[in-house]
Image (cartoon, rainbow, N blue to C red; front, side, top):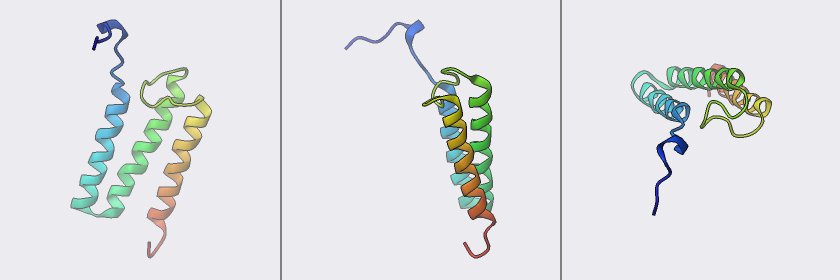
Length: 91
């Protein structure tokens, strides 16, 4: 099996940052509670949407999946949904 040359290799650092942030949200939820963990997750989704909006094209690698506006809409929709559940009493 051959490995691609260093110049062609895709590391997708933005994807790894999002993975680490989601893991951090899980740890925060376990230590501080679900409300705080959900707040961290909402923040991560909003920041990923902003990064996607600023990055344009195929940037940032690992977050760019579809067109810019579709990605931003999905990320902000997920953030809004989790935020709404986070603020709903009794959930």
